[in-house]
Length: 149
Image (cartoon, rainbow, N blue to C red; front, side):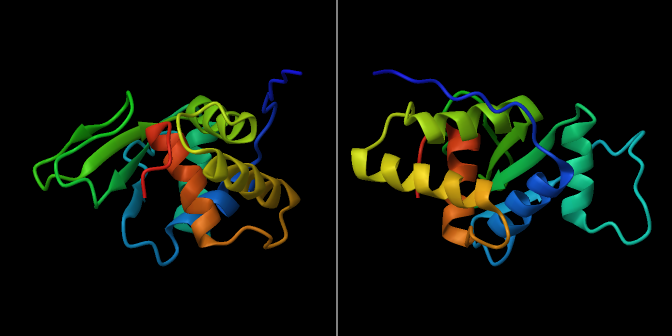
């Protein structure tokens, strides 16, 4: 049997949960929203709210891989002057990455694929079910199309 997952909707709360959990304490991942024009940023919005609002407004966020050492993975990144990998991510890329994690359609070992599926399940369940290593796994699939670290 073959199946295909379709992510229909991601809310601001969903995106904040993923991005906050992935970056909190991460030694390799950093995120920026370079284009904030037209976003309805309110007092009290945290940086993750701004990133989520940017994605939902059709803008890209920049995900920085500080472990890149001049290398980029997948089809999206480029290297900056510090040899960090820069990955411009939009909402469709987030959806496709989550779909790939659920479907196991990225090129990695079978044991990692089952773990990635569990990571997405924890993300879907919400309420603090997903931890930092799980969120970082999902961000790698979103950014690189694979689990690298």
